[in-house]
Amino acid sequence: MELGSIPAVGFGTWPLVGDAAYEAVSQALDIGYRYIDTAMIYDNEGCVGKAIRDFDIERQDIFVASKLPRRFHGRQAALDAVAESSARMGLDHLDLYLIHWPNPDQGLYLETWQGLLDARDRGLVTHVGVCNFTVEYLELLYQHTGELPVVNQVELNPYHPRAELREFHREHRILTQAWSPLGRGGELLSEPALREIASRHGVSEAEVILRWHASLGVMPLPRSGNAHRQRQNLRAVDGELEAADLEKIAALTGKGGTPLDPRTFVQRW
Ligand code: A2P
Picture 1: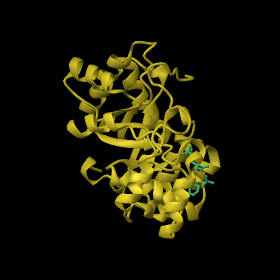
Picture 2: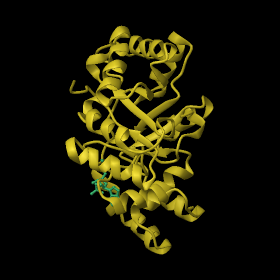
Picture 3: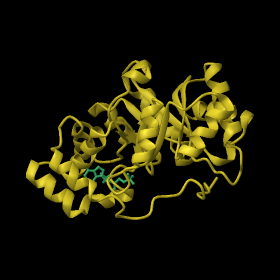
């Protein structure tokens, strides 16, 4: 699937594993999700891939993304990671492969990026991108390779709207994706300001939040194991918020827990 026809909402799969991952992805595809997000470190590529393979649809009509973990940083290792993820998912190729975290303590994300460009040039993956990269790291990728990622997937929600990063993405045509769009573990769902907006519009808090992402041109990747909530999340972006709602949501900036800092975050493996 071409990046231009990427859906407005994707289906996140962390921390679903085993049968729960298989069931959730099968159900999500049935409901109409056409973008599935996984990662090698989620330990679910096998069951997520099987759900995709078992679903009765042309492969080209589903967009599949996975991510490269810390221990596959390096130019050759990046090629190996793409091959490993594809084999684990049982798919000939992936639509998008992302560096999961920059892990700057290892000092290898530039080589890793070069390896992903090699993988793309060899046709092993259609698009390559990153997650959790700062403007500074993105600029370094460009300085060393002349290429920027097509996607940067970051922690982005009303507590952390990441205006500066989004502006950089807009200037450089990088698609912004949001992981844990409802706040980690859904922490934003009990925010009184969102509850008020939701009840005024007769929708759920989750719908308000995902609509907010869409209004910023951000693609959210909500995760739910529940069919009703999956459906709600997929449809959420169809509605609109009023200017006054957006102002209210803007007042939440900086509240909530501290986002993970990619300059110091060390991935488990
Ligand atoms: P559930 O799977 O029971 O629907 P994270 O993004 O960090 O993975 O957290 C997502 C959390 O938000 C999960 O606990 C999920 O629970 C919950 N969730 C997802 N969609 C909705 C929704 N539309 N309404 C309420 N809770 C939701």
